[in-house]
Length: 167
Image (cartoon, rainbow, N blue to C red; front, top):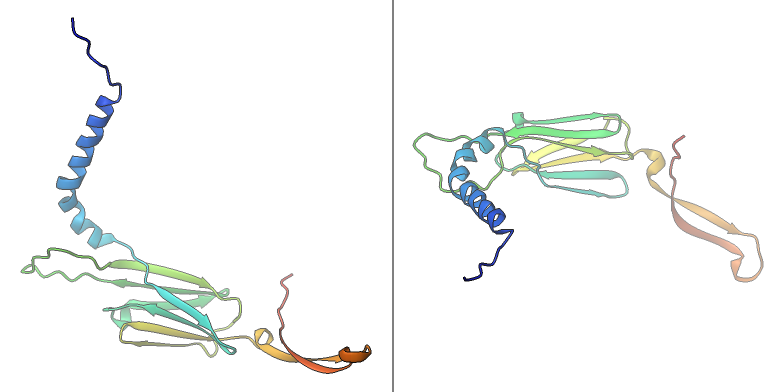
């Protein structure tokens, strides 16, 4: 009588292969249109600052200005909108890699507390938002007067940034 080796994971591997085959071939086409219709995406942003302003630049290529919304409240700037996929019945797409649908991005902005002086512009698919900083968070020069002897005597100027402590 010949011996047969028993593999306890054989059935599990077979089931995994069948599920992978099912989802890799047949289901890909079934869900393609659904993801375009209700998909969400997040536009990429760059945030930087200088001594007077905070600047947020967001990539929003192919969007109409009326589909972009900005709100500001409680030190939070919210950028939202929707990029629509406009499919013509005569077109036969082979690949769709760009993202479509609604998006919302929120940014905590502690250095500014009002909408006064905030500007926004949209050019060549890039939204640029300029937020002025509050006076108390801007860098200021503070003079230090030395009171000791030797080299520490005299006046020096250093850069300092005043921060408001939340209570």
